[in-house]
Length: 314
Image 1: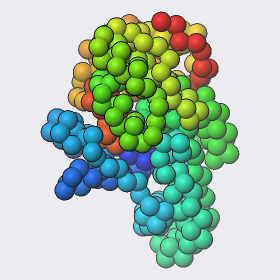
Image 2: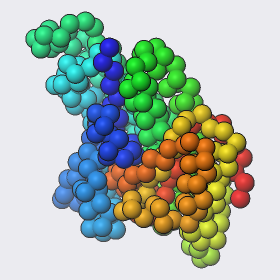
Image 3: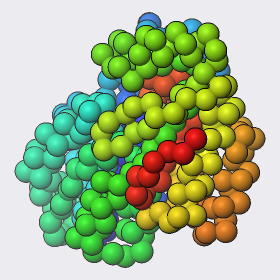
């Protein structure tokens, strides 16, 4: 059986991995004043967005996910021919309408695929499972990578489904924003309270940076440190300790709001990489999507793994 994986553009994975596993992308449109950027996870386009557009236009940018009809059309154009079973993995339904739109589209896809497959000479049924990752950015990447690896290994759909559900409910994501003003202002536009007024005021005055945790659809600051470098180092050290204690995925994902070549230079990365090597854990690093950047700002660092959520020890 041909099993495929489709994600939305906010899912952070390296471009090489996306190509190797032929992972489909549901684009997200970003309106920047009079300009329209379609986020397809093209690393060159995304880096240009960071260097030339985010600072000037990011705060007022508006993102629009694929509609149910657009998702339906994308699947019927090619995906229902190329695969027999697809896992469509989306950013948390608490963050975006993508999951809702994909779910609505799935009913129409399953009603309409038969004639399209028949015309292409493809026999047998087509099945689709839409999965709410309950997380975002590189945490969604951890889940998508797990599904893609299992499909490549030849597991049956039901086996992959059970594993995906298990990992989905145990995705631990963390991030350190580069700019508190940016992330607070964007959060206010969306009615979020992750970075409150007092937290912002104190953080701005003292250069205090929070570590924000994302887990099962909820985001909250769980620690604060003096300076961006210290916060990133502590975040990486926390994940390194979780690797030593045991995580459930053989990979972790890191994304950065800017040139991904800078990830290896971040404080604490070398120690994290050594622990990962010693424990046989792959680090999958990528540029943070333009869609994520609109909400998180430049120089944001995010990291995620699948495994037990344990207390953050600063």
